[in-house]
Structure formats: structure tokens, C-alpha cells
Image 1 (cartoon, helix red, strand yellow):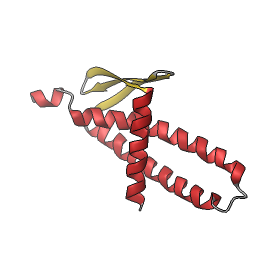
Image 2 (image 1 turned 30 degrees about the horizontal axis):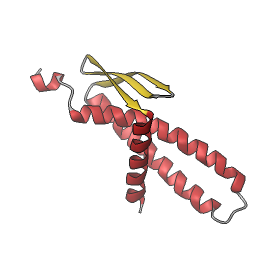
Image 3 (image 1 turned 30 degrees about the vertical axis):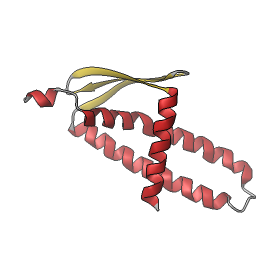
Image 4 (image 1 turned 180 degrees about the vertical axis):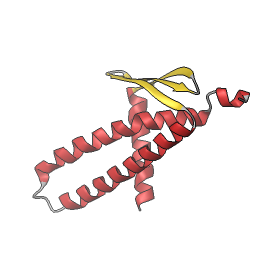
Length: 123
């Protein structure tokens, strides 16, 4: 095993970060779709719902891709803890345990960036 294969890389961190954020984004979309049901009589409802469903499909596809990369790179999410301050993640990369914490404001900013990138890909 080479030295580089046991060291956590920036790509490893980005993979675990996406693996953490994508389910949060899915939960937010589900909440928003449910809230939109109050406005079914509005003309724009079906258009927005279609768009949100397309985003949801993109998220699931990306999440599947991330899970595949995690398996290939021997990365495992061990524990994800969400609280009012943010998200704390414990994960294992090639046998070594690591942690990271994202404050709530950073989670929100990352989710908005992910959502905007997905929107651009759908256009």
C-alpha cells in the first residue's frame, strides 16, 4: 500500500461532505414539496413541482454515484449528528477514522451552491 493511499485526500473529504449534504437536501425538498401542496390551485404549482421533482431525481443519481465512489475508495460514514449548531460527521477512510463539523451557516451555503449547480445542469 502506498503512502498516498492511506492519507485522506481533499477528494475524499469532498465525497464524504456530499454524502452528508445530499440527504439533507432531499429532506428539504420533501418538506418544500409538501408545503407547496397548499397552493395546488395556483397556475405555477405544476411547473414548480415538475422542477423540484427533476432536482430530486438529480440528487438521487448523484448520491448513488457518491456511494459508488465511497465503496471504491474505501470510505465509510460512521456517524452523522445534526444539532442546532450544525452537522458533525465521523467517517473512516481506508481504515482511519476522521471527523469534521460544519456550522449551520456553512451547511446552508453549501446546500444553496449544490442546488444552483444542479439547476444549471438541468437547463
